[in-house]
Length: 385
Ligand SMILES: Cc1cc2nc3c(=O)[nH]c(=O)nc-3n(C[C@H](O)[C@H](O)[C@H](O)COP(=O)(O)OP(=O)(O)OC[C@H]3O[C@@H](n4cnc5c(N)ncnc54)[C@H](O)[C@@H]3O)c2cc1C
Image 1 (cartoon, helix red, strand yellow):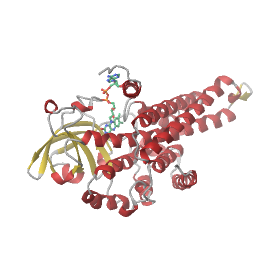
Image 2 (cartoon, protein in one colour):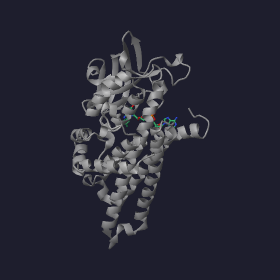
Image 3 (cartoon, rainbow, N blue to C red):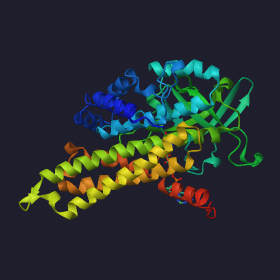
């Protein structure tokens, strides 16, 4: 059961920290395309990024529900949790499938902030969403694996110490099921970069540090394999359910930020001698956005409860992400429209949040792929691919 009182305490704590990082801070970071190092360090030092690490490894031992509130509040306060969310969902993969040795080795150092596990490398340029066709291979050679291939859109690599990598360990034509034969590894980025791993930044529409990765005979110690060889796709799906639920929470934070901002402005801005919010053409899109954000929030709690109690969470995590990303995008549109021309001025922060929330229609999974999942897996409709 979700304990609302402790969630409220988390909200208050995160809001308190976020109050030190004003809109001007986030605007400046966005304009300069900088990584918000100071904010990320503060969040880490306050222990929020160690929320999901068990107490025995010096974390707080909290669940996905609590983690989701932390990220939601960052976005609701006008910030962007995209700089830190990787640590939360990658943690879920390591926690559920890592060995005791791996947990002992990394978790206390992640909890203290000495290390960051902010990156996960799945997407490839030639295969896109068709993940089982990935071409990056990891071939075992004695006490290590040799990795060759390419990834694209891999975020936060330049600001992380560790990365989870998905690679094929058995060729596709030699496995019974296409989802088998892929494995996940922990990559020490400091050792890897320049020794078989090349990182090329991708300039993009949001202030999101994301990269192309080139693997050329990168050696990874065999002890860095997470779980059983060949089962990586299943493990990564667990992480992806956490990721989708957390991103749903971020979208809910964005949605509430847009609704609040639009409502305030609609009450204050006077045109034709009355508040623009008195016109139903202005008020109704804001009201509609509010309804949709709050409805998406209900699905987010279902996903959190299922994930935290170890039940299959795929359906609700996907639906929560779908609903929340759609709701935040519609709230963004309503907010921009309410502000008229001022919505385009950087100093109002709307255009920045508008760009940031738009990403979640595409990443970490596009809207069409969620619709396809629901059609096939929940409704039993014929497979389309
Ligand atoms: C800023 C950013 C950060 C990212 N960070 C990461 C990261 O850290 N790690 C990582 O692994 N990936 C990351 N990604 C990649 C992201 O997960 C993918 O971009 C996303 O999953 C979509 O894949 P794609 O871009 O290859 O699109 P494609 O698979 O090429 O699809 C293109 C379009 O076609 C549609 N489409 C494709 N096939 C079908 C179909 N059968 N039916 C209906 N529609 C279809 C898709 O919905 C999409 O709209 C990031 C992307 C961005 C933009």
